[in-house]
Amino acid sequence: MLKKTLIAASAISLSAFAFTACGSSDSEGGDATASDDGSFTMGFAQVGAESGWRTANTTSIQDAAKDSGVDLKFNDAQGKQENQIQAIRSYIQQKVDVIAFSPVVETGWDAVLQEAKAANIPVILTDRAVDSEDTSLYKSFLGSDFVVEGQKAGQWLVDNAADSDVNGDGKINVVQLEGTTGAAPAIDRAEGFADTIESEPTIEVTASQTGDFTRDGGKQVMESFLQSDDSIDVVYAHNDDMGLGAIEAIEAAGLKPGKDIKIITVDAVHDGMVALSEGKINLSVGCSPRLGPQLMDIAGKVLDGEEVEPRILTEETTFTQEQAIEALPDRQY
Ligand code: AHR
Image (cartoon, rainbow, N blue to C red; front, side, top):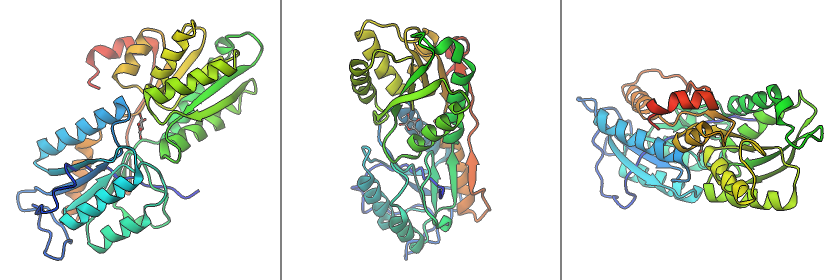
């Protein structure tokens, strides 16, 4: 499968069409370079505000822009690809120096990215990838390896298989709460998990449905899983928020999350870490939302004509319940 790039962008308002870029974009709109003092304008098209992870990511980008003297134009696409495309087009019209974005879904970006390229505005993908054959459409992709995250979740379950057959029927029945359909983290976290659990034949994903990366979505899907199946051993949620929604549904059904049903999540952001430290989640795979400082650095280098790596991976780890208790006092997101 073709992979992939993502863009992170920060923007503030799409209505500011009369905006003048502060870098040295020429009147044709493009060939952007940082101005003499290193400042530049970035248009950032964010996915939305669907999760604690996303909120922390937006804060990181906005804070980093402020600290670096970057004029940030930020748009919240409310989870809709068409809004992101509109935002990117607006940034092209505004002649920003650089565009960054985190694509809601993987496919369908070539046309708008070609428009940015034709306008000589470099694009940087952050957090999520795009699935495009034309890698010249973006300069770099900064973010996590979501397949590895899914593998880490699966490996924990394989390693803890003996304790995870809560119903004692010799099988480990897993229900999966998927992220947004078509989004890179949903596709990759499912793939990494599925590949890894193959090594333990007692583990089976018995149901899988999208909860759209939201707490409400996770709660609703989990309620319907609980109504149709009384043999669920494990929930694998593609993010903390859906795991937290599942906890609400499990508790409402009179069961103990983390004990009667094991819970594995991805993100390890604040609310997930609290639930982990309370024993309601069993493992959270880290996914760093703090991409802002690196993004500003990469953008500055691109505008200065420096070479940047086409793929920049963020470092992350996993958290058990004990590790969450230890990490929480210093956790900043
Ligand atoms: O793309 C990163 C994912 O998007 C996070 O894991 C999830 O919480 C968010 O919505």
